[in-house]
Length: 218
Image (cartoon, rainbow, N blue to C red; front, side, top):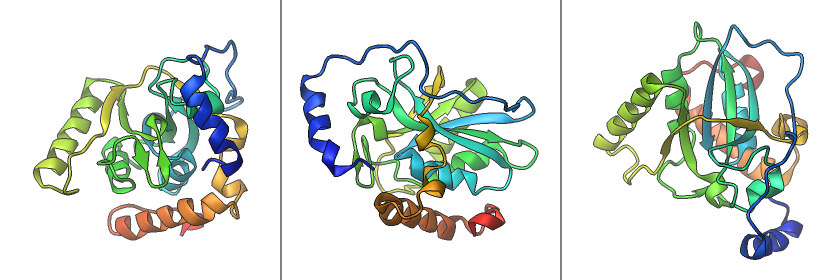
């Protein structure tokens, strides 16, 4: 996901840079959208370009936004998050119609579309910003998440310990405009071609018997 030309400078900044400072203004704001009749859910499972596409394909999902959550830096930007010092992970916000798709289904998709046993890594992406997190709003959602993890663990579904964090969503910061719908806007990007698209195809094959995929994503 990271351009090779900026990997070395970013690694150096990881070692020598101070803690990221809070920013006065958000890097992106959603305007002129009324989602009051919809529910929201938040997950982190690696590169948000990939995860956004997976959830946007589901019937009942109105919109998905890429962003940052789980950390302490206020109004973080992409380069701050990439240092691994903000505490934030690349995350997504799902706007969904609860009459068409339930939180439990979004949770199942979350675990079926990434590897929850790899600590601070997903595919080729490394760092705490790529860790696995299932966020919850209230105790009811927290219980659903923990019960599902216990079910997966007791049946040894992944064969390894699940390292997914279960965390209350305190704040979700929208990522920069160019990250939103990145795969749709950049279908020939090398990362999209070699990582995002194969990951989505793998998910579709695995989930075809239990979830409805929108016609424009088939």
